[in-house]
Image (tube, rainbow, N blue to C red; front, side, top):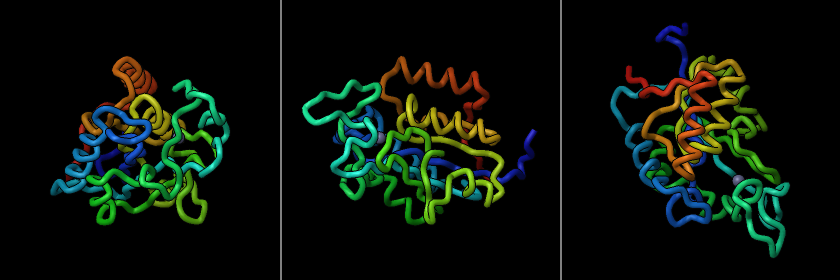
Length: 204
Ligand SMILES: [Zn+2]
């Protein structure tokens, strides 16, 4: 068992405009999740040793390793997706409710998907090409709380990778949104089956 004094990180996965209502690959409830995460960050007593926000950050004018459809083709919503989160565009920005909180609370931004499909935040890099695993280990993190978008894709991939890297992992209820109800329920079941705890965040 990990003690309550174990060092703990929050990973906020891909809460970006293109994944919220009005974006190019919108997830219903994305904006509400962005607002609830922002509220969570502002809750008195909420304390993490490290807060990380990941972002999909695709290369412009490129199919990003087959993540975007070839010109003239339509996305299959399995391997290929509508063009989204192209680096330095509006769609790639963090959603406004979260963007406001980011400057005050987020310690590290991890970018992923530069020229390739990348669902897990663990495929991303922070400044100086530091991997997320290196970042967490450098801060002595043992427990990782995961939230964000989308539950059935990037949140799931991030939570499962965190487990695989040896961290204790919690999925924060109410602070994530999925593409479809069936795949979201399946993803939560898969995460729980793998050892992810579904539990509220920590307050100290
Ligand atoms: Zn992507």
